[in-house]
Structures are given as C-alpha cells and as structure tokens.
Image (cartoon, rainbow, N blue to C red):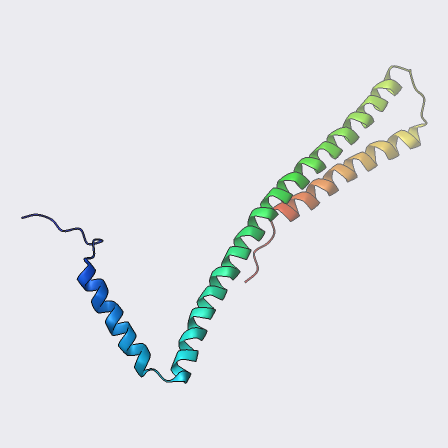
Length: 129
C-alpha cells in the first residue's frame, strides 16, 4: 500500500478551505472582525517582542564578551606594571619606601579582586523570580 505524504494537499482541499473561509468572513460582524484582527495583531506583537528580546540577548552576550576581555587586559596590564616595579625594587634598580611598596601591593590585590568580582557579577547575574 503506497504511503501518502501528510504534507501534500491537493487543490480541491484548498478551494474548499477558501470557500469556507470566505463564507465565514461574510457572516462575521464588524466586532468579530475587529476581535480577530486584534488577535492577529497581538500575535505579531508577541513575535516582534520575542525577536527584539532575542536580538537584545545576542547584543548583550557580545558586549559582555568584549567587556570581559577589556577588563582582563586592564588587570593584566596593572599586574605587569606592578610586578615590573617590584622586580626593579628587588634588584635595586628603583627605590621606594617600605610604606609605599606595601601600599602598592595592597592596592594591586584589592584592584584585581574588585575588578574580577565586578566582571563576574555582571557576566553571571543572579536570576530574579
């Protein structure tokens, strides 16, 4: 027995559907037509809203990626500059007092931890109910 394709529709079925729809439109009142148009309009509004949300999410992902790499570069540069200064002091090529050196190391650590915390909080926000 040959299998029929459920997606294939013959022209007689389409004509019957068109006639039924035309007859139904003729018997609909203006209020029913407005209500049907409102339903269609609401569905197109929902599709548009969903499309805008999807594009917003896509843009947000790319901005988060860019922001994460920029912050990583800033932290890496800050760490490299601090380590270079510490090595220069260690090999007596530069001179800083102990208080300034302690402040440099402390602020570097606080900056790195703070920036990474901010980036992680932005990249992975808490889900709200």
